[in-house]
Image 1 (cartoon, protein in one colour):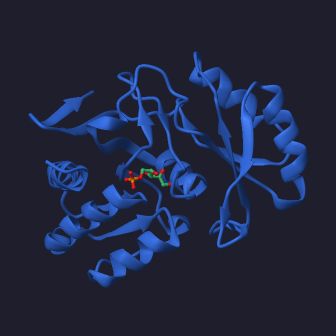
Image 2: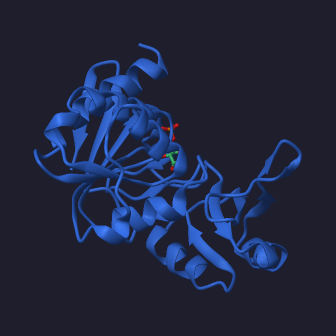
Length: 222
Ligand code: 5RP
């Protein structure tokens, strides 16, 4: 199976985790897009969704799914999203699609985080994928210096020759070359740097369930 077919398979499997007559949280990225396409097929079973990015909101609406503001929702039974890396205990690196801040916010009000990914995302130690850090633009050089002191190689994410600007009007620094032995500790340390909006480590609140697409079918980790 191709990587896209594996992503489609986990997207289909995730529909089982969508409770009827509820509002659910929806992530961002190619795997989340496949999930949204599957959700479109059962849209009459849910009340709507809270989106983790403008791109996800647009795709949900294109399927006729109501998109709600998180401020109008008290609780989400489930949040379903992809990951760039995930360990067996559910710690993740996210933010390859630059949506890490809204992803972390929406996930924080969800009862359950269901991660959907192709099996190549499963790792024994996080860090081969450069760690995204969303920063306030005026602080990007200062934050980069502090991130370098942690032992990584910071690079400002660019798009079309300009710094990429997130849905929140911020920038992304990708921190390469890390070997993350203690993801919870590193998450706390980077969160503590003045000027950081969000670090793409999802360890303090990781995935509760992971559905991983493999050649032998969808494997569940929980
Ligand atoms: C976006 C994310 C995505 O979940 C992550 O980048 C995985 O993307 P894909 O499903 O395209 O492999 O965190 O900010």
